[in-house]
Picture 1 (tube, helix red, strand yellow):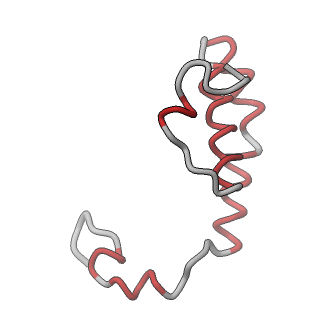
Picture 2 (spheres, helix red, strand yellow):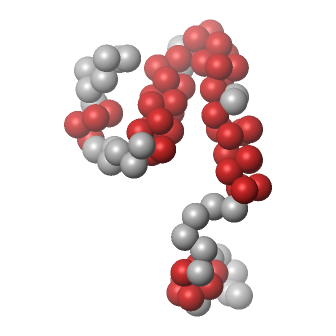
Length: 82
């Protein structure tokens, strides 16, 4: 494989056989992205980044619901959370 390329760029069928993440990949997602959100939010409050952590949580929730994220949904006032 060439440097800087992912497998599906060189061989489209390499990625076509697996449409969804494997269980270990879901576990990593939940551990590192979902379960750390409360801690990131607490740290973000002290750094002035609390809204960005909330936006990440909303994005994860919308992604799991297969809701498309648009510029309208992330603009100021686009959610009841900000």
